Image (cartoon, rainbow, N blue to C red; front, side, top):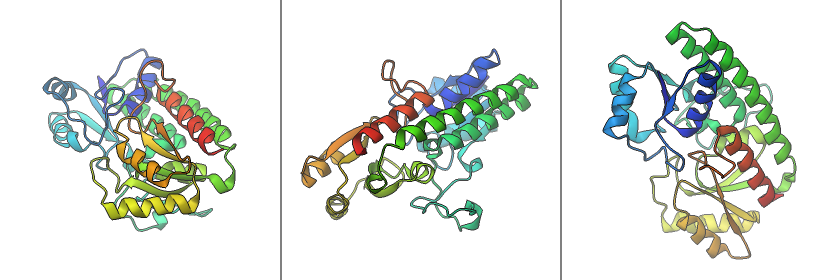
Length: 282
């Protein structure tokens, strides 16, 4: 009946459908990188049969664009979440009080909205509304609102965990440009990224890596954050070049974690990431 592309969306969609006494499925599994994931023929057929396909959009699911377009052409409703939750540009500065993103001219918009739990809470409500419209069952709308409230509690929990990080250490260096929403929502600064751009499917130049090493040394950040869904060899190389005991901390970026990780659900993923960041920087 309903299918989500990424594990984060699938986790939230699953909570909504379970609340309403229904089921949903997810294309990707724990550890899959949404930037490079390609669907099997069976998964493409599954998308075609679904009444509702929930995607991040804004180019995140690069390998699924043809399959998503085909499902829509065959009658499925495609709900792209990222364009509906006030997307930011890559590298955009945090908003001043009273501003909205409508006040800014947009370029390439960032699809990694799930790193702001409040935005994912809005996404839950959007999913519930879409399911209610698709099926005529208002229970989905009520369940979307219920999951939204649950996620707002998770947002408060994440804020409480991150409060342990002193203001002068709220600096992130990550594997690729995916933490813009996190930085804006939770008052952090992105000092640099190892892989340029918003996709993991890119290669930094030697000059870019050398510049990043200098940024890490200048900021004095004690940790670099890698991605459990992508090999961390480049991050490890930067940390080794910096020296001085800089650690590499893997975070759940493109996917929830496997069973037993504590990050099996979207909520668990965000709480786990917040705890890892607070422990590394606090």
